[in-house]
Amino acid sequence: MNVVDTNIWIYSHDTRDPAKQTQAKHLIATALPMALPWQVGCEFLAACRKLAPYGFTHDQAWDVLTDMQAIATVVLLPARDLWPETRAL
Image (tube, rainbow, N blue to C red; front, side):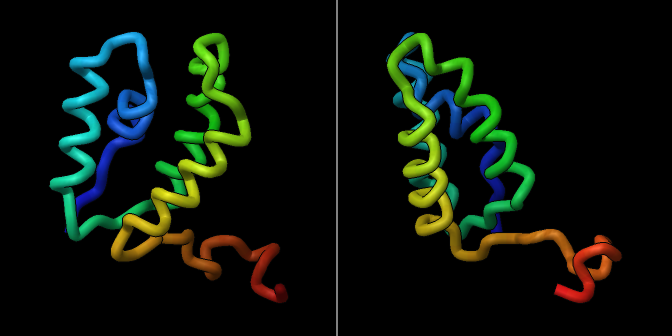
């Protein structure tokens, strides 16, 4: 099982460096089977703000996160017992 670092996901949508973008897309395509930790998804959404001046919107970031979840073999969420305030939910 592989995990793709947040930076690779960001590079795959950063149009400022086409060579880096192509390499990042290749890494993602060949990283299967893949796990997506919740932290990578959160970091991706936060880091995408840096791409806003280059036309990458907040809505696009959420769409990409949906795609990331679809690509992943497993999405790793935090264990509920680590968060006492959510145990009753």
